Length: 341
Image 1 (cartoon, rainbow, N blue to C red):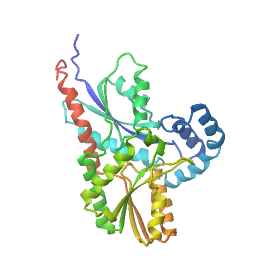
Image 2: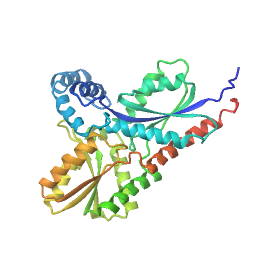
Image 3: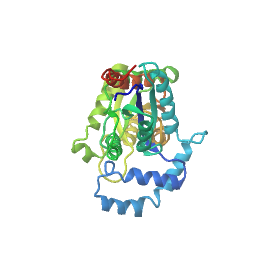
Image 4: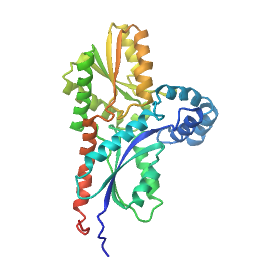
């Protein structure tokens, strides 16, 4: 018997994750989940668990908790989770009325709360027939985007009846994404002036991961080149780099901190940094890029350093999200004539 009820559709915006609080215990729980993912750390599992539990989790959480405390919102939440919720609210408002059915937009984290399984379970319980999952990682990597696929698969493996699921791989070269990035730079520079150099700093990955086929570095370079082209930058006015190294192995180069120090030593006095890999400001942007690397540049002889905020909940960023998910929602809706509308 065919249903007479109009089916709801769902959208899940996914970011990496954040601790529940800026405390050592909360950070330890988050790091245990995050660093236990073999997509993130490819060292043999048993050896890595020994290192993680004996040398990292007993000591690192206390230091990292202090860093989180330095950026934690006055409202009592992490910037990443607050911004993700703002993005969900804005996208929900934009999508309503686009189709003759309700579209439910939800937030999820790969690690931490709200988790992917609980969000998918909730949407399924609400009768959602089609869920579009949008990982907010513009450049696909096996270390960030692929764990979203894994989380979806783990949930589907437990279910007998499933909604249709669509996962958007990435959007590193989407024209609306490049235009939103460019406009964010223009808006910032209209207020704060133009630097000698614009640095496009992306979160790094170990070089062996790239050697094995992770497309992330190439996607980052494509994004950076397109952004420079739209901004009309000359070759000597911008560069790409990679930040957030962890451990002693070789990571994708050039390294952000080293490049900043080299520029300052060579006489570059003013730098602005944008981080196109981040859809929301978080510890890596607000503390590492905005503060730590500023000290690196100034101590090496630079004079003016500024971090350009992530796209966050900018209207053009929310419009990009709508542009990404809407075709999938519409295509599914058009294939369901057996529902009474």
